[in-house]
Image 1 (spheres, rainbow, N blue to C red):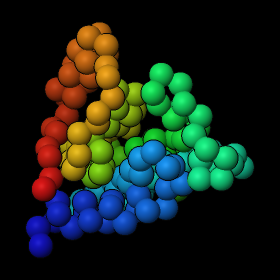
Image 2 (cartoon, helix red, strand yellow; image 1 turned 90 degrees about the horizontal axis):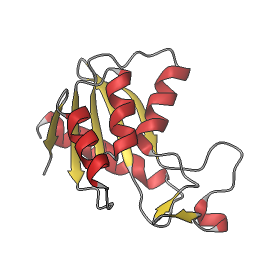
Image 3 (cartoon, rainbow, N blue to C red; image 1 turned 90 degrees about the vertical axis):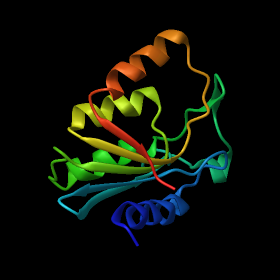
Image 4 (spheres, one colour; image 1 turned 45 degrees about the horizontal axis):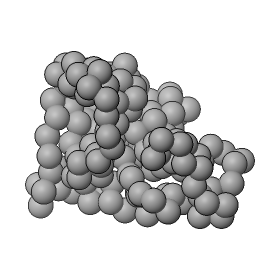
Length: 141
């Protein structure tokens, strides 16, 4: 098994921890071939999860959950683990805000499995493309 497939399978397992009923997403961060952080979409600590109280939907998005990519970045930060030059393996293509966070965290390459099916405005789409052109983005599978 090639490493990108292996790390994506780990992300698929990580996403099973998500309490979101609409979409489960997993993220795995790899530095020098070693997993240094993981994340999945979930409500903030101490807040009821979607599977307990339902999703809070605004503009067709559940705003109760923190996205998997951001949780992975926060978990790395709490552990004192820099993500400079990391690869991020995400089960769903990052949204605009997560793409910006990944870029600022120093992630150099994003691997994803499924497209992100959100409706973006033209400005959001162009900004996302601008952010992503500074990183390598590759589909797995």
